[in-house]
Length: 338
Ligand SMILES: Cc1cc2nc3c(=O)[nH]c(=O)nc-3n(C[C@H](O)[C@H](O)[C@H](O)COP(=O)(O)OP(=O)(O)OC[C@H]3O[C@@H](n4cnc5c(N)ncnc54)[C@H](O)[C@@H]3O)c2cc1C
Ligand code: FES
Image 1 (cartoon, protein in one colour):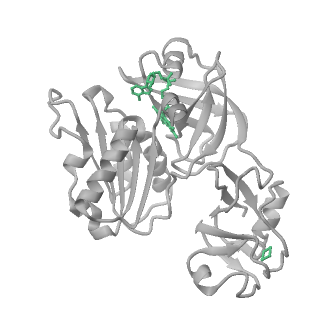
Image 2 (tube, protein in one colour; image 1 turned 90 degrees about the vertical axis):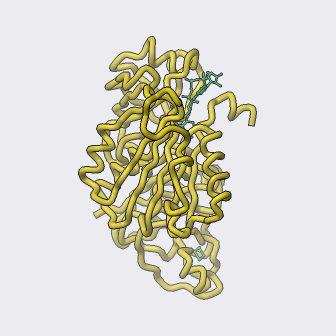
C-alpha cells in the first residue's frame, strides 16, 4: 500500500506525494523532485526537522541533538528517519520555492453547472489528471477569457475524480458572470493548487464548524471525508446565511447526517423577514456550551466580517478552544487592497 504524504510549505502551497511502505519521507520527497531541507541524512544534524500534523509513522535512529524528546512528543519528526505507516500531513518549515517545487498547474473540463438558488451556483470539473488535496483546501481557477484567477474551496471529497465547487453569484462579478452567462459543459478551465492551511485536522475531540454563505463548501468536503473516515466525537455545524435564497445543499447535509450519527447541524438567516425560526448571525444561536470549556476544535469559513464576528464572540465568551482554524472568503479586490 502506498501512503499519501501531504507536504505543507510555509507559503500555503501543498504537494501530496506517494511514499511506499518502508520508504523514508525524505527519499519519497527526493523522488518527487522536492528538495526538503536535508544535510546529514543520518539523524544527526536536525536540518530535516518538520512537524507531523497527522498520521502514524516509525522513526529510525537519531540523536537527541537532532530531535529532543519533548519535540518528538509534540509531533516533530526527522524526515530522513521517518517511515510512514499511514497517510500523513507534514508541515515543512520552508517555502515551496526554497524546496525547488511549486504548486501544481492543472486543467479540467466543466461537467456540471447547476443553479442551486438565485444566489448560488455549483459546478464540477473533471480534472485531466488526479489531484490530491486535503478536505478544506482550495484552488485558484482562471476565469476563461481573462487572465484573472479566483479562489474556490473544494466542496467534494478529496478522493473523487470530479472536483465540485459551490459559489456565490455576485452581480457583475467576473467569475460569477462567466458561470451565469457563458459556462457550458466541456468548457476547459485551468487552475493551480491545492492551497491553504484550512484543512481538517485529525478528529481527536469535538468539532464545531461555523459556515457563512458559500463558506459551507469546505465543510461539505470535510464532512464527506468524515463519512468515509468516521469519528466518535461530536461534530456540530452552524450554517448562517443572509436570506432564505442563500440556504443551499440542505439535502446533502441531511444525507450526511443520516450517515454520521454524531453529526448535527442547524441553519439561521440574517433577514428578519425570512420567517426562518432562527434569525440573526450564527453567533446569536451559539452558547458557551458549544465551546465545551475549550475542549473543541473550531473551524470557521465565510466572508471576512463573519469570521471576525466569530472571533469577537469567542473572546467575549472567554473560552479559548483547543484549536481555531479559519478561512476568509475575501474577494480579489480585498486581497489586492490588503
Ligand atoms: C481562499 C479563498 C477561498 C474561496 N472559496 C470560495 C468558495 O468556495 N465559494 C465562493 O463563493 N467564494 C469563494 N471565495 C471568494 C471568491 O474567490 C471570489 O472572490 C468570489 O467568487 C467573487 O468572484 P467574482 O469574480 O464573481 O467577483 P469579482 O469580479 O471578484 O467581484 C466583483 C465585485 O463584487 C464584489 N464582491 C466580491 N465577492 C462578493 C461577495 N461574496 N458578496 C458581495 N460582493 C462581493 C467585489 O468587491 C467587486 O466589487 C474564496 C476566496 C478565498 C480567498
Ligand atoms: S538530515 Fe540531518 S537529521 Fe535529517
